[in-house]
View 1 (tube, rainbow, N blue to C red):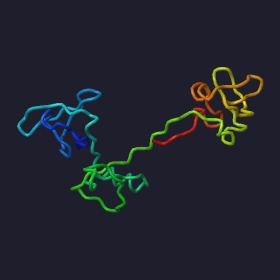
View 2: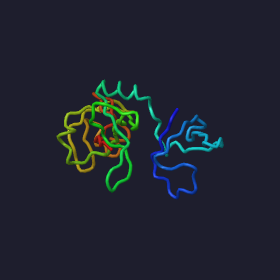
View 3: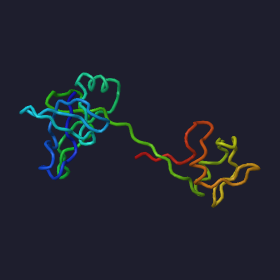
View 4: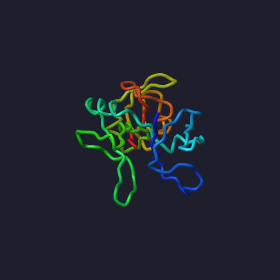
Length: 171
């Protein structure tokens, strides 16, 4: 498989590769590829320093399916990086990838989130409960009392979606 070195590697003299290099590699471990230089010597490439390049046919197919595509390009004052590609045709002289899905994390609700929490059902280790109010300290549920916002996030899911009982934040 081919990889593109995407991490700016500094200082350059410590590693046998640099940003924008392309190598044919094989898997060595969970965190390292092994590549062979033009002179025949082999060296390791740290996986977090590179992006595995998919065949162009897979990129075109993903684009036709409506997936977001990114191109490795030089950006003024920022160096080379992945940017969204809006074109309709693809060049064999450029490098593309299917854009990664945004990562979702969850943070604790606050007392200001009453409207978002009102009448929601949650479930956890001790059963399922309906949120009937929100206080400064947490959510109020039936006869069980109050659950802190920290415990709500860490120990409960919304019954309807099965997602953690916290605010979704896209990174």
